[in-house]
Length: 111
Length: 110
Image: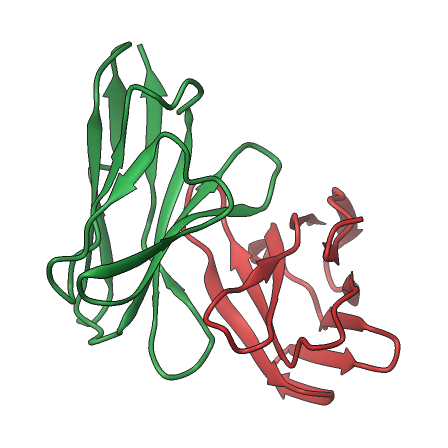
């Protein structure tokens, strides 16, 4: 089945720790995105990538980093510089059209 | 002022009612319009995609775009309890980035 997978489903971060969220797609899409969603709010763009080995900052990139070494993969690292990381993180991809397709999400909690 | 405005609700209606969800926007360059449905603790799923103005129908769902008024709507006919979710509007001017509304929480009461 074609789709987007995210792992883990839940992630716990200790203070001062970096954590990495995984996102993989087998839709052969060129573009991939990371969003953050806080309770009762819409989606805010963290980073996006339109092609392998290239990515751009979104609206709230501070405290986050990404890499795009393969077309299928776009991992997100939440660094210790992100002081309020508790949120629902969503990965998406898009092909030739503007529509984006989402993974199931990762919920990040701070211990 | 946000680029896309969407009433967060919640909007509560009885089963079988017609539901109207709306978004307004300020950027006249937007030409791609989408509606997504998001169940609690799940990723959003694409419901409707419309290019430019006009109506598009898919089963019980109708998407309407009025570019002159900068207003888009999603209508749900014969609403079901399974339609209870948050509905997000999104739009683009074709630069690979979507601009999102905050989402409207919809509750269909049996």
